[in-house]
Amino acid sequence: MKTERIEELVENLVIDIIQDRDIEVVDVEYVKEHDWFLRVYLDKIGGIELDDCQLVSEQLEDKLEKLDPIPGSYYLEVSSPGLDRQLRKERDFIRHKGDKVELHTFALVNGKKSFVGVLNGADQGKIYLDINGIQCEFDKENVSQVRLYLEF
View 1: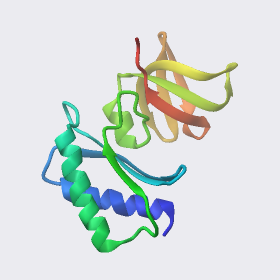
View 2 (view 1 turned 90 degrees about the vertical axis):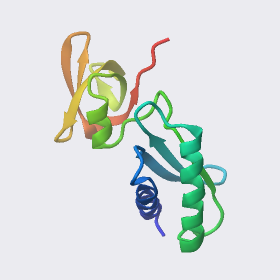
View 3 (view 1 turned 90 degrees about the horizontal axis):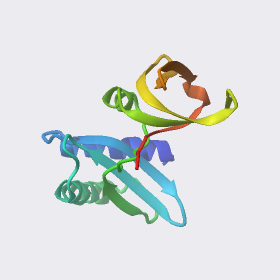
């Protein structure tokens, strides 16, 4: 089964598990590092708790054991996406509108590949940032990554 198909299947299983809770699936990734990892990132208003992750992990493990859709061995990790989470889905951009983000591009834009600004939104293949009072627009196809920006 292809990686994308596994991620989609797992996301649907998790959605079924959390349907009566105030928990949201932020992302699912099935990646090969040294070993295979199946990572599920959850969030909720007020922040995800260890008990939430444990509940989802145990129920997901049971469902995956019964279905057995993933060949070979892998490590299952269920966690929060972290404070500097990457924004990937449309709902991420909606939820974090008005938050400070760091945007990285594949190619140079005005001599730079990294920008920090306030997220004004995203639509129709564009991401909009307010960078020091200047409204900037980036083509999503040229954006390698958008993360919440942490100031220390």
